[in-house]
Image (cartoon, rainbow, N blue to C red; front, side, top):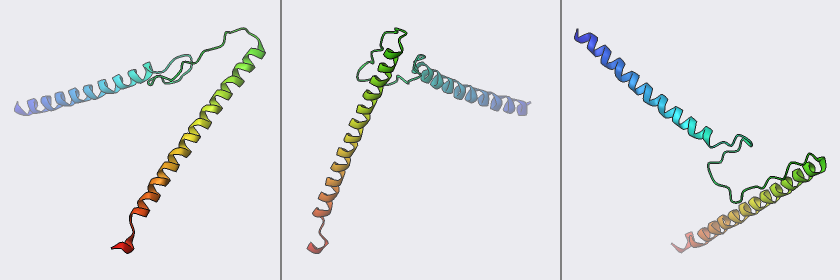
Length: 109
């Protein structure tokens, strides 16, 4: 009789642990899904610096092409800005390394 209770209690604890794990995984997945906008498929967990203004739908091919070109130019300028920021960061790192090597002179000891 006591052997049955040991099995029942261990199976019950195992079921509770599995239920908690499944519940936490479903909650994480639901929060990730709620952060994706259905129209663009972009994760909106972090707010963007400026909201993008969509052009009016006119059905004209020229308007579509100009909107695509405008978006490409905007993206290109953002990439260029990020690259310049990376170069500046590398320059600061290089300066810090140079300062460190100049502060340590093994001939002084």
